Length: 247
Image (cartoon, rainbow, N blue to C red; front, side):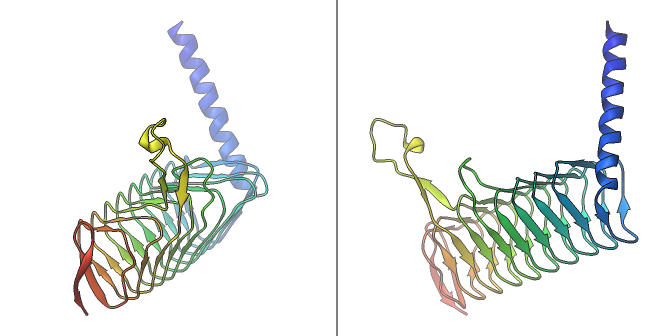
């Protein structure tokens, strides 16, 4: 019985790897790109990879029907990083992109990343509610630290040269909790976009709540909870975050 199970498992594994190779062969892959097998490539959508891109072992690229994923040159996808693009959705990624190991991006709309964007290890970027279809836009040179969560129930826009430290959470949705017949977390969905403007610096372990705009070159101190808009050229910190000083 065990021998039969092993043979069945081995055959399925070989067939799965052959299928992934076939799907990669149907994709547009640029010159001098490196693929460390196995790489998972599934779905009926279109994958375009620029020159000198590196896909490390167990990178997972899934693209639904009529979806597209376009990756600029010199991108690096570390081991077990994942981008899953839903049907009819589109992701455009600029040059010198990095997706860290075990990071997960689940796309339910059209997303656009500029050049030199870095998303570090174990980040989770997707809608935290099944009906969410937020748009994600990330400007040039923006860096997102390890273990950060970005909720895409609503839109999130990150400007150029934004730095987000590790273990941050950006939430674009909340729940109405006044109905006493329901658990507080099962009330009606309330969603608002988040905007972080050029050059802002978000310290580690910061939580940003729905509807917040953080202005240009603003600094948010580590461990803060941001509930209201933050003006440009200021430092905010605390729970809730308040003005510490102007820059």
